[in-house]
Every structure is written in C-alpha cells, then in structure tokens.
Image (cartoon, rainbow, N blue to C red; front, side, top):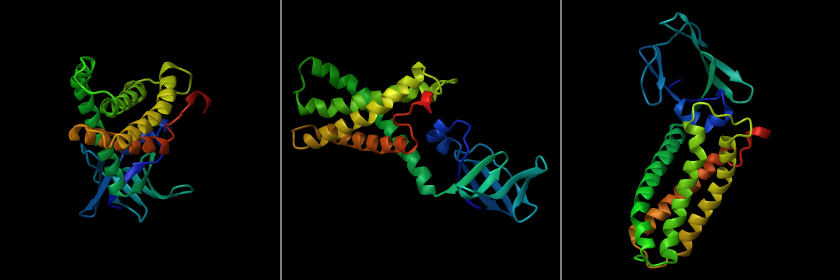
Length: 230
C-alpha cells in the first residue's frame, strides 16, 4: 500500500489540475499499521486491518480504508467517502517542481520588468530581438496570472454560468498557449542576436516551462474551457 495516492473524485472536476497535488496523500506502513497523511504533512492516521480488504481508524472505530476495483480506474482505495489511486512519485513531484519553478521565474521576470521597461522607454535598450525576447515571456506571465487568479483565489467561483470569471478563464486559456508559442518563437528566432546571456537563457527557460504548463493545463481540459456550455 505504501506510496502516493491522488484523489479520483474531486467535488469540482475543473479543479482537478490543483486537486491532484493539493489533495494527494502519502501512505506508509510501519508496525503493522497504515499511516496516511497529506503530501505536505500535517496529520497522520494509524489505521489497522480487520480483514484482507478493510482497515479501521482506531480513533473512531469505523472502517476507513477499503480496497475496491473501480470499473474505470481499476484497483483503487476507498478512503472514507473519497476514491484514491496510487500514482508514481516522480509524476506528482514532477508537477510540483514544474509549478514551483514556473512561479519563481514568473515573480523574477515581473520584478525584472520593473528594471528593463523604464530603460527601454528611455531609449537605453536596443530595439528588435533584444526587446521581444524579454517582452513575450512577460506577456505570457501576465496572461497566466490573469487567467487563473479568479479561479484559484476566489472562494466562490461560478464557472457553470457565463460570468466574468468563467469568461476570463475561457479567453485567457486560449491566449496563453498562443503567447507561449510566440515566446518560444522569439527565443528561437533571436538566438544569434547579441543579447545578454542571462536575459536570453532566462527567457528560454521561462518559455519552456510555460510550454510544459500549457500542456499540463490542456491535459486537464483547462485550455478553452467553457463551463457554461459543458
């Protein structure tokens, strides 16, 4: 049983792209007891088996974990009222690393923009590729923030009806991969242009991570999501 498990039946399907990380649990086995805890720590259970397929929570005396065979997902764990599936650790931690690195680069690039944009406006930076390599990743950074912020940060978001949040998600999710492609294209097109190496490789790394994240969102059905017609 030991391993990392992801939630198979989130209450809101559209939030699966965050639930697969935030709701993931880690299970370890020690001294004939099963210990389950959130992936990022906090609490830990101390379940024990009463049959080959059923475990009990000693705190409540009630069944807590059962082995089930889901018709779609196959062998899974029923934990309380939720269904979980074991997932390779490298996939879960890979997603976390992708999001963490991208978040760091987004913050860095926004801070960096506060330096180079005034210099550009004052005519202290050469135009052309030197600016485009900086500009497209910045536009991409701002687009993904504007797209996901209303959905991730709001406590009550109505995506099933046509609202400002659902419309922002729809339009932004279409523009995001487009701007990501422009970022990659600018990095490739101006690879031989005399540009500060740190600036260039920062733009290249940011563009590549945005590409991976766009694929991540596409996998979960976020790109072009129209909740009001689903």
